[in-house]
Length: 59
Image 1: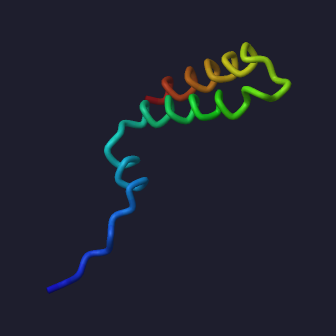
Image 2: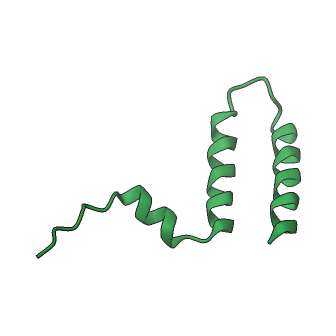
């Protein structure tokens, strides 16, 4: 009988959520990461919208 390798939780989570959900999660993480920076939230949101429109054009 063949032993299976243990499954990493992060690999499993990424495999079961849609690419759109992954993109949303990445944006939320980026937004939190840049909260204490000199960038304005408006700048970040504008960039997010740009990336979203490009990502959804391909889909």
